[in-house]
Image 1 (cartoon, one colour):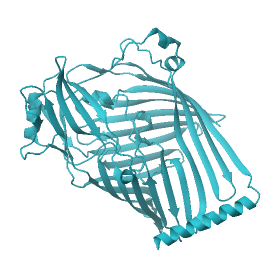
Image 2 (image 1 turned 60 degrees about the vertical axis):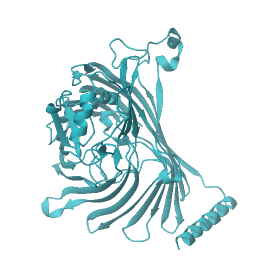
Image 3 (image 1 turned 60 degrees about the horizontal axis):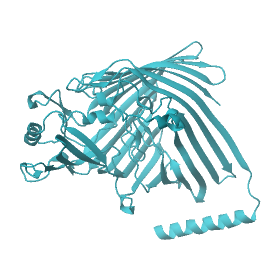
Image 4 (image 1 turned 90 degrees about the vertical axis):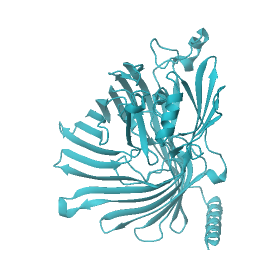
Length: 502
């Protein structure tokens, strides 16, 4: 039946194309929009590594100018194309700056003649896809580069796994990176719709620029076996050089990603069930090789992207019997691939491989299923204020069960452990003033396990002609051995942005 349905859809589409070739071409309805904004940020507080070394200095962190264009072209009732791209000038030369961390290789005089070195820029492609409507009864297709967002929670969506996340800019807070995919939406009848997505090639998440700082402290070993972790800690002296080598999965058909979701409405409540089969978009250590180069102990660590399957559920709506309070519940059971980290040693007089007590490579991620969940509510208090609160189990970058191990030093007696899937309280509020021209916003994320936090205040002034002026701060609170105090998470910063849209 499935094969015959696909064949029928192809025949119908071919007939429609043939008819379109004979008929006059439909007029193209083109709409353009865009924005231009400047973004300046300054790190206001230093962050140090476990050993006391300076990791994140104070100074300007970002000086972006962004020009974004979006075009939507409609060809009759059955086709639409969308292109959404952005040019970003970083505002920083690639020539090294005094005191820059981490240090970069010295530039040459020739670099000062290279425009891309003096004034670098890059392109973001948010969307480049084609929509085809009514390909078959109730069936629409979207082909090309796109972001498919699933889930009803605010920002923290455990069912949303189709697009890798962008962690490079903390103020974007893990927005999805567009990827090439095929999406089919089938609405046979009523309020229910079935969505199927196929992603041919895997794309990794974009890491923050401070991510390499996570390699500077080998005291944070991922091994779940205490005895093995303490053994490795005793063999590895401070000052080891760690080099990470990410390895993307194969580009064959078996490693493409697939997902399906059934969503609908019962009464006043939105519901959906979903399934995803793919990979985690953040890398995990899968192999390490210890060696000596020019008298320096070096660890070359290969990073991989473990497979996972996710079964998700979400519901959202309002509660008329409770002052129309809005609510959302979203949960996902994740079935992760087991990861055992192979540790090879190429050092004279040492064993060639380190194994745990069972004679296997040490376990870092168990295959035991685990839960991610978000429960939240929001409420509009009068015409000028809004409040939002959520409980989050499992942050957007967390993967696997077991424990995360932190240390203030290499001393095993000073270990700090926390659940790998942490618990967080998220709360925010908006207040509108000056006839809604001024928006005061404050959001806080608090780690219930270690007491660290992110504090995100903003003041947004809207002017005439679709202009915005924003000033604010993004502050990390906590010691270096906490979730948000970790230097690899980035430094606390203040920012100012000016934007005009058309």
